Image (cartoon, rainbow, N blue to C red; front, side, top):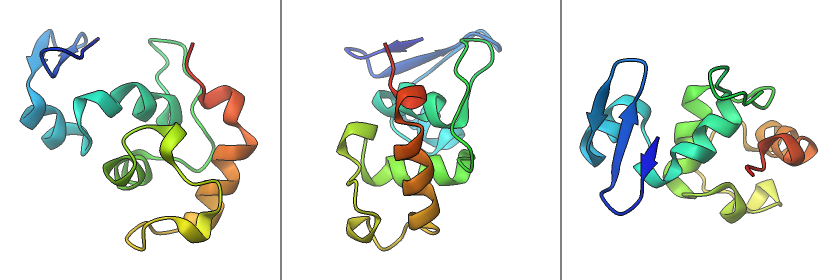
Length: 103
């Protein structure tokens, strides 16, 4: 569970509260990006199916540049140059946008 005001993340599986540095170390993204991270990599505990082709490295790479999925350019050629496999990631994301959109 993410707490926006405190910039912390509750890791329910380990019963640990992580501060921003702890979240960055574990996931490679800021706490505010965790819902989007889980949406693309999937989280069976919360019922997120994930997006094909999106693993933890891809999610961290993209969400470290664009903190939320809504900020990711639809044109993969406009993605930050540090993001590898931008074209297939973009195609997969935008073809499965309904699955990635959080309620």
